[in-house]
Figure (cartoon, rainbow, N blue to C red):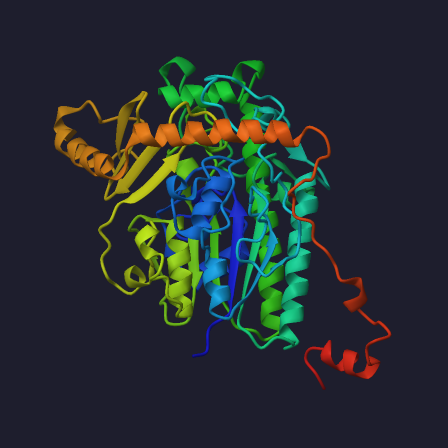
Amino acid sequence: MTRPNILILMVDQLNGTLFPDGPADWLHAPNLRALADRSVRFAKTYTGSPLCAPGRASFMSGQLPRRTRVYDNAAEFASDIPTYAHHLRRAGYHTVLSGKMHFVGPDQMHGFEERLTTDIYPADFGWTPDYRKPGERIDWWYHNLGSVTGAGVAEITNQMEYDDEVAFMATQKIYDLSRGGDARPWCLTVSFTHPHDPYVARRKYWDLYEDCAHLEPEGPAIPYEDQDPHSRRLMDSCDWRAFDITQDHVRRARRGYFANISYIDDKIGEILDTLERTRQEAIVLFVSDHGDMLGERGLWFKMNFFEGSARVPLMIAAPGLAPQRIDTPVSSIDVAPTLCDLAGVSMAEVMPWTDGESLLPLARGTARTAPVAMEYAAEGSWAPMICLRQGRFKYIACAIDPEQLFDLEADPDERTNLAADPAHGETLAAFRAVAEARWDLSRFDAEVRESQARRWVVYEALRNGAYFPWDFQPLQRASERYMRNHMDLNVLEENKRFPRGE
């Protein structure tokens, strides 16, 4: 069979509530809006885990953190866990990554045949949380609110430098693929770090939002003493007492965030334009790893199950899939099975251990009844947290916290916890039964603690004496680039030109 090319466009920390049906009308994102017009838009998509490395390992494997054991941003992603890159490569695909995937551990490929850039974050165990020390802040890598107070304009930042390279390497790879030197179908994953904080943007994008009507959160901040226990832990982990966050800070941070959505939209436009000009066809999938609270409830960044943090955009443009909006809750862990389904690749050998399911039946009209599940066991938590999203409700549980139940239709801002409301006792009991059948929270907690303790020992040991980092080092084969003396110049110039003979 002829297998389709696949282009995956991934962004970081993009709040899915801003993509109710493609990008919100007030966002300056023409390229993503054009993509939405030809895509199936899954309007209520949730991350597998609201943090970078756990969310990405879940997205790539179709498994939640308890299966991948990628609990946090310093947990190793084991090389024996198949990802969509493994499945597609095994079936004959050329699999390529340009950009971020936050792999931790010595395996920095996870099924990709090529990586075009290094990662933006470290690959070692240095960011390991420690449940043995609840409330401890590790200041040199824990988020703090400096990203909010420091929001503004810059022509270049560490993050912009990275994403400029990610986009450039991706477009160069698309040009290379168009030359036809490799007859295999390809899967190119392009993964950006924006609009992840810091909320600093180039002037041309910052100026787009000067008069934006959405620079303030929808609702007022909840005072610290009125927050739920986990939200208080997150505020503490962000060192909130050390910062005097003004309304101007909030407006500037949100403006920088929106501006960086437009920056990424431009980068995506460059990539899609290159694909079109090189006359290649590909399935296009757009997704984020998790969201950003953007000051809603007084919270920033991610690391919780509220909509701003846990909900992500997901759009798929593919032959045979009619453009439409789907409101059934789905998950980013459904992406791997969906990609394999689109490519005609079987995952049957590992499906008993896969949490996700293909979205193609849903896109073609088959009802989906399974709840969306999420897990979180990283910084800001003192014990593993779980979440179920089904119908109009969201259920959140943690062994050390009161349960939470929200009716998202009646209460989209999640301000009213219904867990203690007798009128919703039956709904709570049903969710509780599903959660208890799925998770053993005490065992989950023991597994996380064991992993953390092991990693602290290994990290401290490996930083003594000679240090060999795991960070991916992209290598260029200089003797195979441009013109070299083992090449026939005439053949080279012909083969490197696209289109030929025009």
